[in-house]
Image (tube, rainbow, N blue to C red):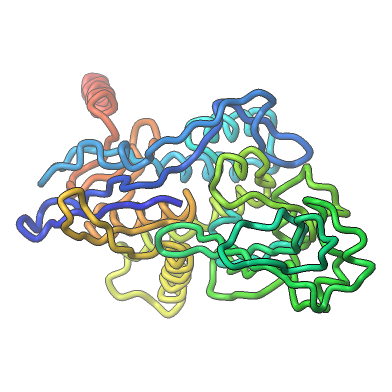
Length: 374
């Protein structure tokens, strides 16, 4: 998760909204592999952070009508290419991995998660003023504690709670060991249920479920016997990304949701008086994009000179791409395909047909040859 700053454009209504990285970042590895159906970092891959908004903001100047390529365009092209094939081929896997090297994983799990409770476990007694004893005198400096993690409008927030000796059986105390989780039965009696609150990607439906159902699927190295009690790392930390992996079908499914919303909303510009079926199509795109945008939150940012501004905080790369698409739609900048090479690009020019000067010249040469033949 990171912050995106939206600058004040009130002085010039024609100026595109500028989005800048304010404080946090997105992550990618320099090498990925597909193993057992998962996209995951290759052995020895280097983790690095980057700012996708730098590329998005490139050439975004007042009244600029030149063709623009922005980060989410490459994802739309990837989806278009891969879903044109009946199955994921070796060439398709290479395209997918090359894309991840440039951009990272989409963060599907972070996009869906709003709150999770991790298993209670034995930890060293924290040094808290006035805290004399929480367990039996024979506790050897260990205390039971559990962690809850919530997605806020400024990032992921972690909160831990201590569990006193009351409610913990003597047999559970006897098995205490630093880092060892309490049994699921003991946690249930204490009202601590390892669980996660998730939203569906493409519509507004939420639900609580055990960690082992969906959350654990994104950590393929965690033994199934530990899916509910594993000490999962805090979301969006380097350790999180080293353990996190995305199932290929989850990555492609999430990417296709963004692609479908773009296709359905772009179709709206061709409908002057849409039929009932066309209205349903537009509404579907509207619902999909808004569902993705629900993981993007406004927040207050304090500048270095102690003045304030509004920022937007996406939970994932997928959410950031949805925000980019929203910005382009808001600026009436349609997503186009080059008539020469098929590359996706954006332009506010009503006459735009080509993604680059090279393609425009190529088309001009073709037209000249055709005229000479006649």
